[in-house]
Image 1 (cartoon, rainbow, N blue to C red):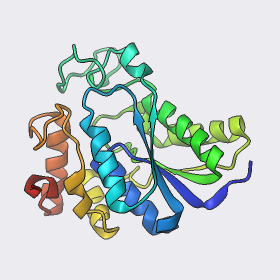
Image 2 (cartoon, rainbow, N blue to C red):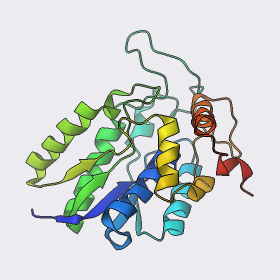
Image 3 (spheres, rainbow, N blue to C red):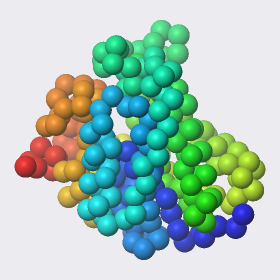
Length: 226
């Protein structure tokens, strides 16, 4: 299927990375050509979805929420299983933290591609980064390249996956957010693994976020938001 190469669908989680990507996409493709999708995947903290809705509304882009709650049924990770404490714990066999949700980005982008196909959208934008501390295998550049090819073959599509943060540090991501006009929207985002707002400041996600803002010499708008 021939899709519109001027239109983009952003996978919006409600976090700082995907919010940066939303504003990057608006700058790259034009405001009227950008929409967003958020997945209700059984995450422990519904605040992520609430934040995504607020961010999309503030950016004035169409927003879709898709329910795919099988991850909660699978369990086994700290982001969907309430019986597992969020901590910087590395699995001895996989070398991955307990916040890794197996297959999450692969499934997110497959559903996003299906939605894009239905709407004739030629571009997907995702906030994945292989420079992230976690080293999640579904955030790597080679994974995105392989998945793009699979989606093209499986859907007879010319879809393109964009990952503008792929090689950026958290400091550089903050600088990009400022450059594309998304810094103010950081006040609406949610990162904390413990679901706290204001953020707990202690979980790995909070510490990584704080480090990025500190290195960029920027005050986190979330910390000063009402």
